[in-house]
Image (cartoon, rainbow, N blue to C red):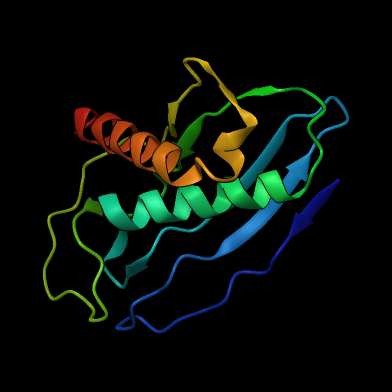
Length: 144
């Protein structure tokens, strides 16, 4: 099953909040959720705290589906690099200058490195979100 949400548009000088774009559950149980990053007219912003909260929210969403029949899951994260992106802080105001990352168009993926309990999709989502956001930002920064 796949559910997608249409992209909402914003003006160039507006701050864009992250937006859920879709969620997919395959017949064999793999579940994926994807969303936009916060950003503005100068591109997406990888903010450690905002990214941790966003990942935790996506994990809770996936956990809320109740589709897992096992006690453990493997969690990976990634980011598409097709648009401008920078590491920084998300604020309510559009930026006037930015140092963008020079990235290839290849996505950056942090594959699962261990199994975790289903608590990672509920009460433990905040902790897992913090760990995954740090790891993803390190992977993005290493690609510069």
